[in-house]
Length: 288
Image (cartoon, rainbow, N blue to C red; front, side, top):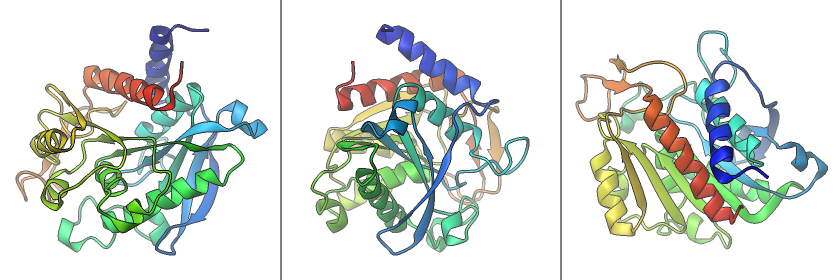
């Protein structure tokens, strides 16, 4: 059996390599959100799960741009970030489920919409995440209690929404997510509402993020006892396996409304964050 350090190295290598190559096949799935919406989702299974052997699962929530690449050779497929995470996690033996909260509702993206005008809010995202949790438990490869939640940006905020014990839909879950990991979520609303996690929470944020800034997440972590890692010299989307930092002037939200936001990869931070993800999952699932 590979030592933990070697397995982490393989995980990181697969995340980087899959930016160019789709290594893990995906299956389309459907289930009903708690709000009644028929959701499309994409499922990646390790080979062992195909024999109906129960496996730990990660429900992964996309950001405001949705699941798919909008240009280039991956257009219409999972974008590089999502495919890379699927490849890395499946390589570690986890199943991965990507609910599609946007196109299932006839929406392509909400990044360019002001927060107050969005028709898809954290209420819908929370209900989608909880529906995915319930659906996984009904599958022959699903294992009760062995489900983690992970999300990026708007999906990171959805991680908070779906683990907030103050929400009746969350409180009603008898067997919640085993752990929750949020990449650069928006934390200001959670701080204001008195968010209380119903599971272990990890937040991975960028020091220079001017879209969803680190400071509210640091404050939230101190209040609720969550783990917060701040990656130096990193902007929003720092874990993307492709691209460089750029200014998005089409985003109306952020620290400086109307002035755009910076997004883009930091390879050092990406490697460290992927290692952190793997460590948190192994701890939650008591994996060797």
